[in-house]
Image 1: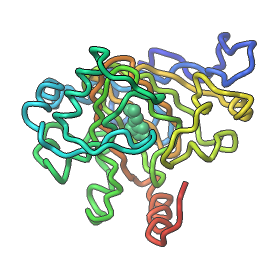
Image 2: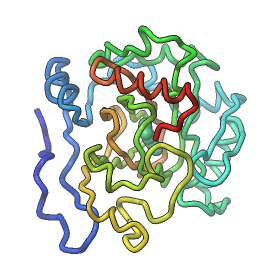
Image 3: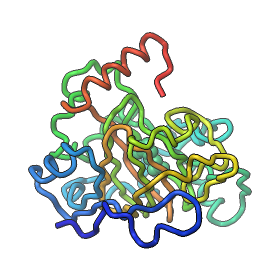
Image 4: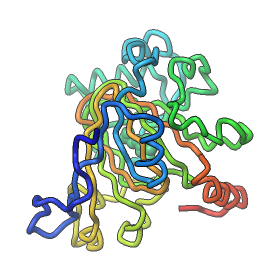
Length: 288
Ligand SMILES: O=C(O)CCC(=O)C(=O)O
Ligand SMILES: [Fe+2]
């Protein structure tokens, strides 16, 4: 059962000028594959789902301590969105998180240093056995049919402290996505692709952060078109998984220390756009 309405502009749509909150992202404690297919997949509508992780080993196993004890020496790159990226190891990053928590480091950026892309599948394939592809997305054509070397690097772990921020963007190559929240809570802001004209190109799919483009705190003098945007919002809690279809813009803030798992995928209803993007990429064209 849907526990929150999502389509009507609510009364909180402020009198003050700025992006308008349309409502909450739909949320279900559980959902049948059939209902998911009809209500969300076919309509290309985002939703937050419980239940998906219930049978996952990762659900209890994946903690900061577990990653420190077992993967401390693994090389990773942090902080890709902001300034220059930092090469480190999982263990060093977690030590940095401890220092950050204790107030021993100063952060000059909009987001604390963020391990936002630990592409673990090649390095540590056993981690991929700790979860299973959600049954609703069983037609993941990328996983099933396409050459592994074309993998768009769409599967990653994200670890970070409270306050990490991912700027508004849409995901690579017109893929659909799911993002499973294992530890901590994240606030997601979602904007439909039919508003693309009012989203500045800087924030589509590319590196770099542009101060003033935050949807929850926009600089409307610098980015006036942001005032036209209509967004949905939802907090994703441990054990919940958010699904969002191709080309939905999203901005994400960690409300507490967080571990999440992201996966981009291809299915029948986005296969052609993804293939178009793959082709453009292989021809060396930017596809944002
Ligand atoms: O969790 C975040 O900070 C961003 C996640 C994201 O953009 C994604 O999963 O596509
Ligand atoms: Fe994303």
